[in-house]
Length: 194
Image 1 (spheres, helix red, strand yellow):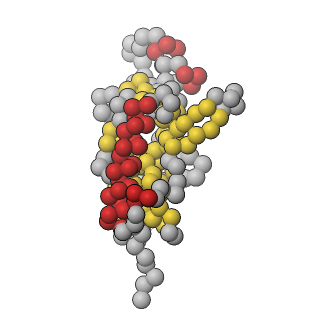
Image 2: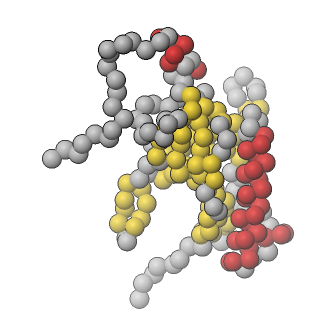
Image 3: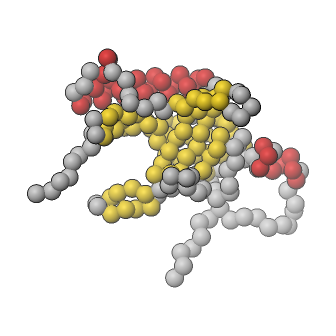
């Protein structure tokens, strides 16, 4: 007999944010714990904060109905909006949208990464730095593990509206107009090695 235990999971509908400013994006490489992630400053984005709280309350209530717990008198065991203080003493509140770098499918680990596109929906491989203007496709996920119940924002894709380079400057502000006849990066994925 198998020891497989089905973990209660419930997902919200996929949603796309309005343009927001990226904070600490790790969308082309994994962050410290093996996740792709992008943060958004909730102090600067109060409409998104309200939207996420509304969506989280609705998902929590639906999970309570579906999995038989008193959602009205309980709260999730996590706070997906993180608060803290910077080195300079400023208060911050952020939400982190994450995607695991692997997922299980038919018992096998499969690599995955978020889709990243430019403003014309063309795939892009450029590094995305904090300060870039992006739209984030996401969903919220309810999970119950070992008697603890969580709601987490999950990353699906990122659309880069304005790309900022290191130091918070746009590439255009560093170089000006494009150089005619110069190298143009391919947006096509590399061919697999044979």
